[in-house]
Length: 96
Image 1 (tube, helix red, strand yellow):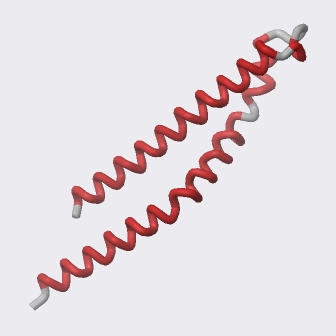
Image 2 (cartoon, helix red, strand yellow):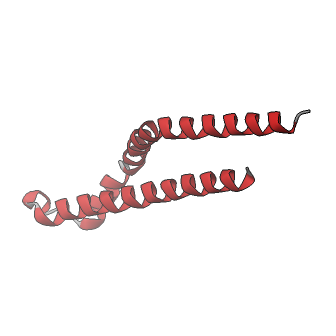
């Protein structure tokens, strides 16, 4: 069982890293392309734009995390139920 728990922990860590990397890269790509390809910021300096947009990053990350968490919650619940039922079965087998 410890190997299964370790594998589940690694997969959750992998998902967390993937979400963080995806959110960061998407946020940067979206905002940089909007800054460079729109004529809206012709007189606006890049460092001021970064400072004004950076305050939205935590909300962006949180919102994406909530969506990903809600979509993966049934999988984690199912995996937890399997782990619990597997441990109860194995403990019953060891009982006399």
